[in-house]
Image (cartoon, rainbow, N blue to C red; front, side):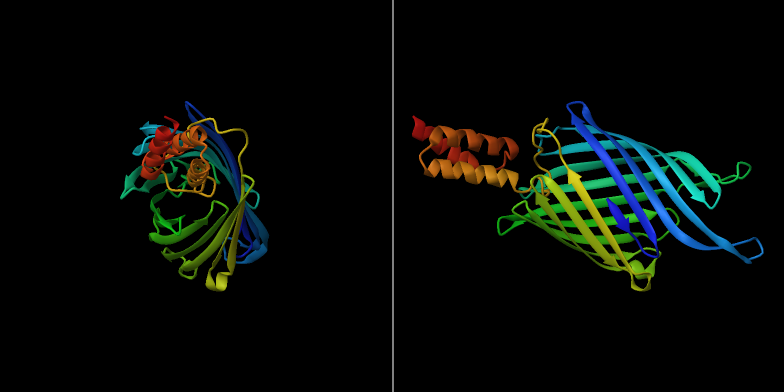
Length: 306
């Protein structure tokens, strides 16, 4: 992912995750760059231009704390330990910090609801001068909720996120994501609150899923600060090692999968290929046990075979 932020600030991030039956392991690297800006001495006099930046290396682990991938109600948790480095001109500071997060998923009115809570940048302290007391890393608390409904047989995800940085005002974000046949996601949102007044406003974006490779883009206008652009690529390798998770809000990679299996099974049933239809309806039910139509069709297919 790469973010072209306001005022020559940019951020790049790359991560790799490996899911196993014992949990998911991940590694990540992030780099923040700031363009040259005017430096000043202790008397407030202009000196030369200086640069600043930061980098983060993280190792993560996540697993289910309650339930599993097939459960309609489940709780997952994760931990990231990261090495943080900052530079300001010729000075540097380093520390160790960590993130923790949890997400609870359940079904409400036969549709998935997810609630998430995370604590970021905890426990660290940066010192540019070894003799100074240093300053703590800015801990941020985030809470989010996502509920998915069906519109024209495609998932519409509705989201809210509350972000509370340490010492700053809370920011609230509202968002919508409409996923069309698992191939195209159209996104829009609005952010309010926070310390930066110009950063309040609309957000727009889209995503494309082409042969299992996801492309995502988003933009945000921040008044005199300019426009922020965010672009990312997600690539999945290998076969699916774990059972497909159910009771989770749809994504581009998963939102159309169950429906595609169900529609293929219906077609097999209509063609009189009942044994094959039973197999496909069973696959659909493994992914979504709440699919009553798939259950009814599977019973009909079984009766036809008899």
